[in-house]
Length: 151
Image (cartoon, helix red, strand yellow):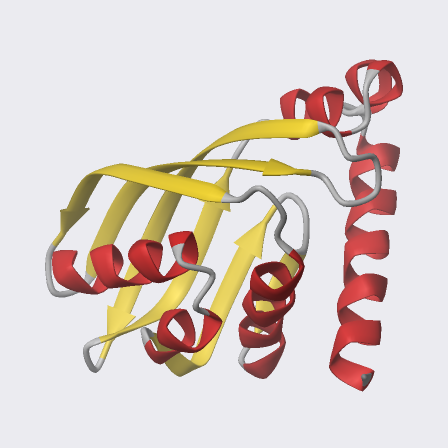
């Protein structure tokens, strides 16, 4: 399963969404602070959207641990946030569950306030830790995903 995680993040670094998606079980559940919980095709479409729109994008991954049922990894992403053009360096800890040799559950944890301060600036630093900010942000990212899926 370590190889599956390596394949996933190598593909992400290469902005190769289809290879990433091939690592996912058809019933995958993805969750993170930016998108909330996404299931199946919606989770897969999120990676297609992010790979297609990524600018100045680079990923590094480490600390991969896995057995046949669960796994984890640390990964870091560097990119320009599309709405502001600001540089972001996000540090993420991922947890995985596997089924039939594929990722069935993928949960990313990162500091949304730290991310918001980089991506948005002082307003993100000020408001990024509040529940209303998190809720609004998840609504905005899902609206963006809806538009991508509809196009």
